[in-house]
Each structure stands twice: as structure tokens, then as C-alpha cells.
Amino acid sequence: MANLTFFGATGTVTGSRFLLEIEGQRVLIDCGLFQGLKENRLKNWDPFPVPAAEIDRVFLTHAHIDHTGYLPRLCREGFGGPVHCTHATADLCDIMLRDSAHIQEEDAYWANKKGYSKHKPALPLYTIADAEQAISQLSPLHYGEDFFLNDATRAKFKDVGHILGSALIDFKKSYGQESRKIIFSGDFGRPKKLILKEPTQVYDVDYLVIESTYGDRLHEEGDPINELARVINESVERGGVLLVPAFAVGRTQTLLYVIRELEETGRIPSLPVFVDSPMAINVTDIFNQRISDQNMLCRLKTLTGKNIYQPQQLKMTQTRDESKSINKINSRAIILSASGMATAGRILHHLENRLAHPKNTVLFIGYQAEGTRGRTLLEGAETVKIHGHEIPVKAKIEMISGYSGHADYNEILAWLMGFNKPPQKTFIVHGEPHAARSMAEKIREHFGWDVVTPSFGESFQLNF
Image (cartoon, rainbow, N blue to C red; front, side, top):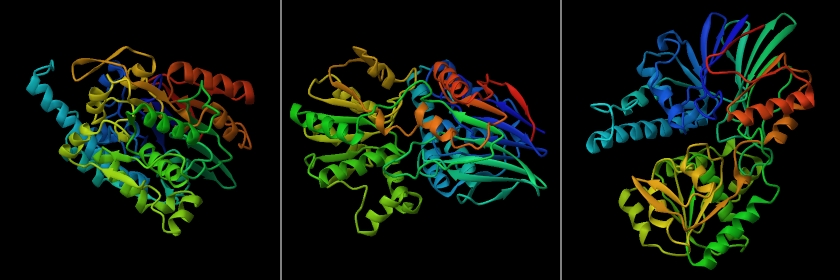
């Protein structure tokens, strides 16, 4: 038998943390930060429900902070075991965990300097030293490589097409000729992605933990490449600057790829394209180094000598002074800056500087969680608070959902159709309440499976 407890990603899209007690081991699947609403963010400060030193190992589905960002805190609390992930995820975590720790330290510094924290002194959730400790515990595996928990039970990563290095985790226990299998989907990617491979089809699944970020929605049927060309050309016609809050991992690189393609085919003019995010710049280097993890078309284009992530006038702005210099640009430019939900980072300075001008455009290209500035802007707010000031929203606000890294409910259902038998139980996680309920209802309606939407801290015994 095994026991599965949900310590995150229940009733919310963030804070992915699932404890699997199996074969005498405590295995944590993902170790993410809670983001978005304050009531969720405060959970990051709660002691982990299980003593960190009693966790034997961690498996990471991918590098996004809502799946990895609690890891330095867990190590600080005493976790000393290995952290298994794919090689690309390890490369990305090396960048992202350091960046997350830097943000934690910066937030504490400014809270103390400005005196707006209730705590005296304000402390970071974790430090760069904690992040470096977590990075030192990474133990990467290749896609498809067997890792044995014991003689009968193995774990394996399989490409799930969400971001570079993302994987579903396949646990399998053999009993002679019989076997049992548990699958954790992580964040589930989309078919026919521009850069990534399609999600791997799996079979013989006995227990499934599946995400539901888009469990109540379908992506727009329009061509996202055509939509991006339209938005860029309309921005040029209005004489403004196109500002794109873009996740540093995945979304920025996809946009660079598409912009280069649109330039090459003459569908948009060549414009200065600023990547104003040190993390996104470093991540783009990882994408260039790990072409083998990308789809066949990307590999073929690279073989012909193309730098697939380099538009003609690409400008990487690493330093603060380089970032500030972008303020002098008033028209005919594209700025890609993190974070993708406009919750932190250099994007806030650009929004503060450009939102009040009607000639400018702000384009969102991914899911905007409840409680984020991105969601506030998409919902039509007339003002938005940035750095303590209410900024009027006069810029044109656009949204293209086709670049999302998450499958919608039809794409997930299509993948589930490939199962050769019903799972004994399916757990719906990583969605806001309505999305999770909707995904559960659709799976019941189409397949008649036993589906559960777990609550925080809820445990289930698995016949494994």
C-alpha cells in the first residue's frame, strides 16, 4: 500500500506539493511556492506539515517556481536528500532558485528600509545560500531513465511538453507479471507546440494526478502566430511600444522564435526587441544549449545554421542601467520583460512608465492567476497599483491565449482517451476551484471514471 497527501495545488494553481509515502520512503512530488492571493502566499511561511528531515527525496516535474520555489526553504528546515529532475530542469533551477532567493532577500531589505513590514526585522523566506544548498542536492535523470526506489519499484520521467525539461512522473511497481502505476502529470503541455515535443502518451495507469489550470476553458481557435502579427503591426500603426509581460522560461523564448519567423517571412517589420530580464537572458542560453530536448523542426532549423531565438534587432539588457535606457524608446519597439503575471520584476517599471499612454500596448500571452496585476488589467481596471502608486490604465490591453503552456480541457481529454483502462482513481489538482470542478465533471461525463478533487491536507490510501 501507499499513501498520498496533498499539501498544495488544491483550490489554487500554485504551491504544488504532494507527499507520496511508498515502500517505506517519504517522497515529495514537487516543492512549489504559493503565489497570487495573499492568503495563499502566507502559506509559504507555515512550517511544512511533515518534518523536512523526514522526507527521503524530492521529484520535480519542472522548473517553474510554483513547483520548485519552496525547495530552498525545505532544505533550510533540514531536508538533505536528493532532488530528482530532468537535466534541463536542473539547468533551469540553477538560474530560477537563485533568482527567487534574490527576490526574497530584496523584499526583506526594502521592507526593513521602508518600514512597511509588521515584522521587526523583516526576514527573507530563504537566502541565496539556501538556494545554493538546494541546487547542490539536484540529482538529474534523462527522460526515460529508470530510477529504482527498491528492487520492485521504479520511477521514470517522460516528456510532457509544458516547458523545456518538463516531465510527468511515472511510478511503477511490479509483482511478478502484474504491475501497478501512479502518474503525476505536473503541468500538462499542448500538442503541436512551436518548440517543444508533444506530451508522451502513457498506459496502464492505476492512479492519476492531473492538473486543471484550463479545466473550464478552451484556448482560442485563432492562429496565435497571426494574432501576434496583428498586435505587433497595430502597435506600429499607433506609434507606440508593445510591452509583453512574459514568463522568463518558455514564453519569452517562444515569442523570440515567432518574432524571428514573422520577420523572416515579411509579415512584420524588423523592430528592436528588448529582452529585459536577466533570468530570461540566461534561460535563453539554456534553450540554445538544449536543442536536443526540443522538437524535430527546431533541430532541423538549427542544423541549417539558424539561431532560432534571435530576431534581427535583438537586444539583451542585463544591467539596470541598460534596462532604464529603454525608457528613452517611445515607438516602434517590443519589450519582453518578466514576470508574466506582472507580480514582480522589471515589468513593473515598464508598466508604471507606459500604462498611462494610449499609444502603447500591453499584451498578455499566458494564464493570469487570481490576485495578480495581470488578472486585474485583463478584467478592465481603470487603475492599477504599482510601487505604491495608482497608475491610470490608458494603454491598449490585449490577450492571446494560444501561447499558453497549459493544455485546455479538450486537449487533456484527448490525452486521457489514449488510456487503455480507467485509473482506479483520478485526482484533480492545480486549478482554481471552478476549473478543477469543471475538469472533474468532464472526465466523469466522458469516461465515467472515479474522480476526486482533494482538499489541502487530505490523504488517500492507494492500492500500490
